[in-house]
Image 1 (spheres, rainbow, N blue to C red):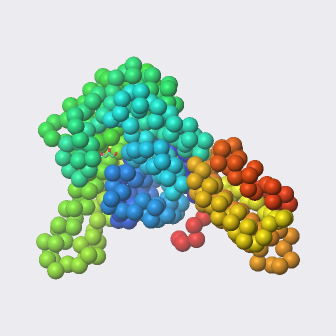
Image 2 (cartoon, rainbow, N blue to C red):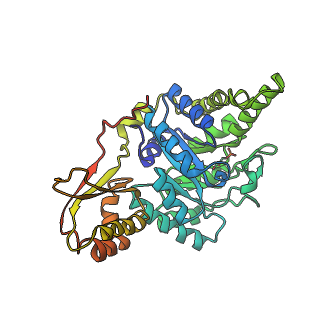
Image 3 (tube, rainbow, N blue to C red):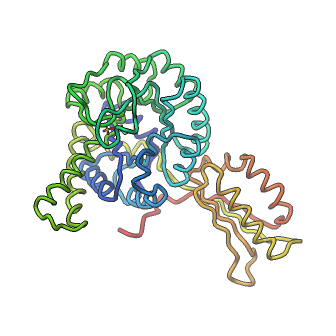
Length: 399
Ligand code: 13P
């Protein structure tokens, strides 16, 4: 069960002077290649899903695969929502299994960026989930994802960054110091002095977007000055494209599986190169020894009703699904009827929380308070409620 709290993962990297790769994945081949690279290097890794890519895959369909693969890994993994553009998207990301979220309001004014980010931080922290914010703006230049980041680069100001972190409470900050999303044009010029000043002022793990195209020595300078997470995508997409084109050239009649058969390996090689370069090799055991494992909690209620009909019980459950299922940190809602006619309790709820922190935030959430007081408690006085934390022994059964 190597899903870990990204605060611990990046805290370790920041202290020890290396960076963890956050690799955006867009298919199962990417997922497999990235995780194999991390396993080979015994390195922590971040599986990243960027909102700008959601038109290429169904976020809610790919997430169960990402989560299953992460749980099967033997190195520490975090699942991250990259460039989430709204509060609602952050809630959805957590519901679907992201253990960390980015809120990207970097195109908004300082005030609006701070306000939205603060809102997301309050919600996410109440779900046990850390948050990355962005201040300044990392534009895109050319390549697959560049069009999602139009306009000019805007550098992060040191004093604004301090104020932003204080106001918002973000755990990690994405800074703009000269990188761009997509392919670099010409020699990239990074403002390392600015980065050093931001690092000194903030003391929290910093994040670089637009990892593609930087030189080995630039990566070293970034890491030496507080960068603990490097986002990387375009180079992986280009390498996957090259691998497909090679297969077309080798056999013009090649079918789909023949075209993509080498993609995973190509992704793996490039990911391994990055992990080695960024200092992540053999860090897995150290991270595991200091990181909190992500454990879900099942909030279980067994109950009997009084004074209502079977149809009203069904309606009670229906309203509950709608209401409780939308509370941040709730991953799933199960309602059931006992199969045995002599069962001590006739009905149940099993509400799955993303984290133990949700036990309190769920209980106090206005939607829960209203539902419980108005609909449930008046007719379900006979009940027991227990919160169960997932045991550390939980293993996927598909290995
Ligand atoms: P590149 O595509 O330039 O590697 O940047 C990726 C990124 O920053 C995703 O958030």
